[in-house]
Amino acid sequence: MVSVITSTGTVPEGNDWFLTYRLVRADGVLVSDASVTVTSAEALWVNVYDLDTQVAVQDRSLYTAAVTGTAAKANNIVIDTAVTALLTDGFWNGVDSTGYNFFYQVPYATWMKPGRYRIEFALDITEPSGAGPTSVDLGKMRWATTVTVKTMVGA
Image 1 (cartoon, rainbow, N blue to C red):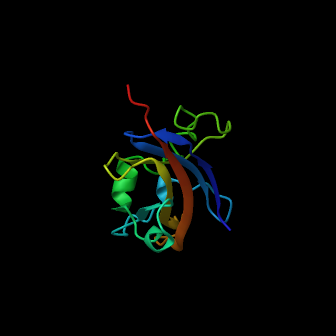
Image 2 (spheres, rainbow, N blue to C red; image 1 turned 90 degrees about the vertical axis):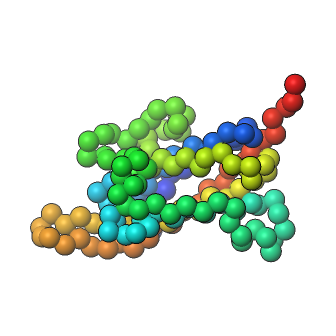
Image 3 (cartoon, rainbow, N blue to C red; image 1 turned 135 degrees about the vertical axis):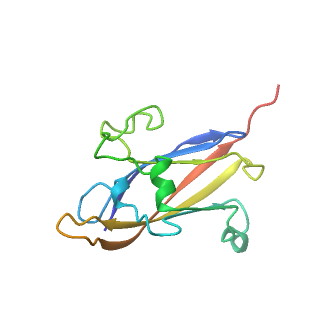
């Protein structure tokens, strides 16, 4: 079993979504950028679904992104916990004093209308081996969260 501590909230329409999570592998170790499978062409998958549509339509993603392992590291999607402690900045918004190690921004797009959305993530992770040249493939870590977009009140 993996552990994911999520921090989400309500977003006013017209804004990007900034999502932070604390990811812990099944062996109790925090996921770090060293855990991201760099050799994977698509180490991170993100899909967003509209929960306010008819059930048959809810399984069609409105937003899809695939990120390579090197891009996930370069863009600090997975925090390098060997260099930096878990972050407790404004993006974490006081969820707890431990912090987060995963950050993702869904950029604003016209499909982000007021309503509820499910964001699903899948991250390829490995266990770096200190004893030899190989790493152990731990497979995909998956999690999901819900974002509510609120209507902006016009002037």
